[in-house]
Length: 223
Image (cartoon, rainbow, N blue to C red; front, side, top):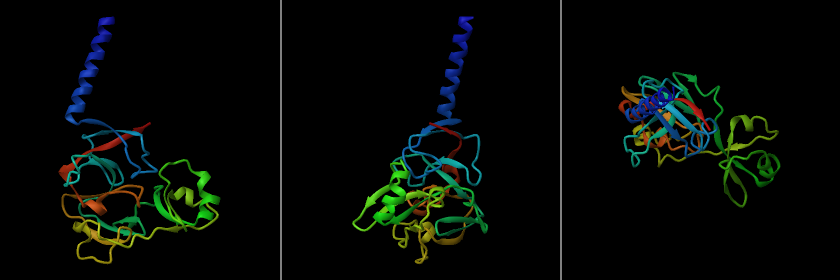
């Protein structure tokens, strides 16, 4: 009986190694806050190359510039043939707001008084406030949190486009990271973005993703 158990364990270990080496299944740790609040820093994902991502799935891939070979995890927003438009940071695909049921995170410019009264002691996330100035604090807050506040907060206005992808923004001097389009995605090209919209280095900055650069789809997450 003991030999059978050891043999079964050995088989499972061999299968696990083969699956990892082949890319059929992958396990990654989330190192950044670019997909928060959905994928939190320190959480882990299990993905598979057997499933191609559908719109709104999280997938892992490489940008064509490779960024030292890093594997990136973002949400798939638009696929080849889709018409994509961004309005105030929210994505519309084929004229449908696909962000409507997603809890997203955006940057806000908040006065110190409002920050201390309504924000500071209500959030434990280390990412939520990063930049302190004499007259304001820049905070990255979830839609679900902001909607419950008794005061109205002002979103950060991203007006510049000098650091954005030329593939998307070239010849469109008035398009910005939060307001652009419509564009039609070419064959074999995919648009990925993080849920932390004002703190995510995604397709808006690094361009569209080639189909053969998509490595797999996230199946589940865990801590």
